Amino acid sequence: MRQAGERRPRSIFRTLAIAAAVGISGCGHAIPIAATFRGGAGISADANLRGGVDIKLPPVEVKLPTAADPGEMVASVVRPGRDGSPSARVAVVDLDGVLLNQNYGNLYAVGDNPLASFRDKLEAVARDPQVVAVVLRVNSPGGSVTASDVMAEELRRFRARTHKPVIASLMDVATSGAYLVAAESDQIVAHPTGLTGGLGVLFNHFNLQDAMAQLNVTTDPVKAGEKIDMGTVTAPLDDATRAMIQQMADAYRDHLQNLVKRRRTAMTDQDRQALADGRVVLASQALSLHLVDRLGYVDDAIAEAERAAGISGAEVVLFHRSGYPAHSIYAITPSPAPLSESIPMSYPGLDRSRLPTFLYLWQPDPTLPRTGAR
Image (cartoon, rainbow, N blue to C red; front, side, top):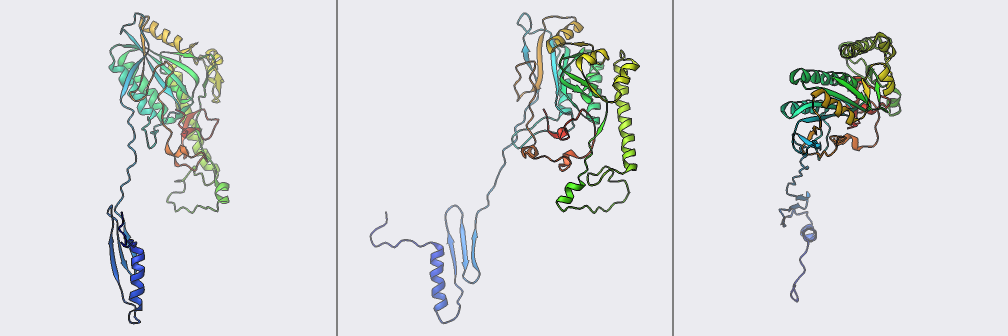
């Protein structure tokens, strides 16, 4: 408590102001007066009345929260065995969302790379001696040409190495690159209301020339190689560039359809001709075109896997990251949206992740390839 007659302490700025007035009025000359103030928490202020006040604050360290690691791949029991005790297992491996070789995540959590995650799941299944069969549960429109092709090859090698039967269960959508992966299974069971097919290729090019003009933005590249920027979003495709890109797209389509032809031996030339334009079809039509072997639900696919392995009443497990719970045969591994997806506005082509690329993808929405529909 302040005692009677005790003067109230002046602030450093008030004190300096008084000192300045005294100094300036001294002899009619401006006399420099310097003052130093030391406060708590490491705050200091130095004043030179000719040069102003220099306040120094202690350095502040800002740390962003550490992103949580979702953990290694583990198996969760989503349906107990018939006798309630550990027994032979059927593993459910989910293939969901757009298939890309890209990490999904944000500041607070690390999301999966769909390609790396798929490989991790297959390796975890191969290490589990109790797993005798696999159900590949697919709900995806496809993805990039290379990611889809690699996933299909990973599944082919898994089957050759482990000799475990694989039954694909197609859910809402299993088209293009996702169907290519499913075609490497021993048998395909399609949900009665699902869509599949889409055996074509897309080059997701956008022409933003007019949009850039509205923003008064022009491009002035320096190029060594006339076609080094072929497919740029800053201009329409000229005839020569379009022809070259079309040639590449045709080659990718032929590669996709040849892989499907090799695996789906029941398909006839007439079947393939009906699908040659890349259309998607209902599951019932896919059955008549021999794209799938039967219609059914996930439980039917599990039963087919048991029959292929010569067992019954198996324990069903789902492989997932340990940080994400899984309690049902329909569970999927959640992926946090990328930080860029926190911005509600999305203009195709303006985001670097949406630059043109070749896709085995059914894409009615042009923003789909990077929305991370997982």
